[in-house]
Amino acid sequence: MNIKFKYIGTIVLSSALCLTLHLLTPPVLTSDTPANTLSKLVLSFGLPLTALLWAIIGYSCVAFVFYLIEDRIPGGKNVRGLKYGISIGLLWLLGYIMGVPKSGNPFINEFVGGLCDAIPVVLMGWLLGRSSKVAVSIDIDNTIYRHQSFIGIGAFVLVFSLIRIVSYYTNIFDTGFQADPVYTLVWTIVTGLYLGLTYLLLRKTTTSSSTLRSSIRFGFLLFGLTWGGFFIFIPLVLKGQFINTILMFLIDTISVTLACYFSETLIHRSNADVLYKEGYTC
Image (cartoon, rainbow, N blue to C red; front, top):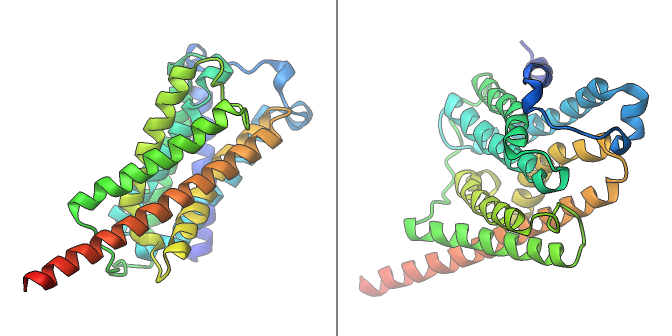
């Protein structure tokens, strides 16, 4: 079967599964959205069609990124697909539960809603991995030492958290920080930590000869497209959220790009120090 049709079929299947999971969720675990906050698109075409439009856009973004980097993800077909699917699925889950303070919905409701979006992403990754024409990933010499893992994770936690916290206090965008500062700060640190782990897992997929180019690929391609594909749901469904969502997306994407750049720079310097010491010892 043509690879394009496999991708289209996987996108349709994932979108349908997402909507089905949301429909099957018991009412007691669903999130409430007041009618006066719905967008004109929802009021004109209904929530199901709007949600379907988002699902097709969102899962298409996830599939497109996998298409671009599949030959660089370490491991065999199934492993590559699951690595990617789980990484992006958990990222979407974190994005979903970010809105607990702003929406006023219980955490468990938002968590279940996030699972309804994340599970199809994991399935998509596995299916795309199985159908991949790339049997063995490209061997990229970009291995890091164990102690350097802390450099990468630390850079993401510090940069992402710092820029987010400044945005909260200056009201550049609204995520519900004023409603529940503690929850928002904990979410921010946890997300920064997770982004660092994702960076270590998928770092080789965006490696190039230039640190800046590698960082832009990771921040704007791998993270930006998948994060944006998820967050486009907000302005599609809720009115008056377009500017807020764009600002949040741009700031997050820039912060991840900067975190990647600092991490790559520090790791390269660490490698140089190691090589110098090994050469000196010899």
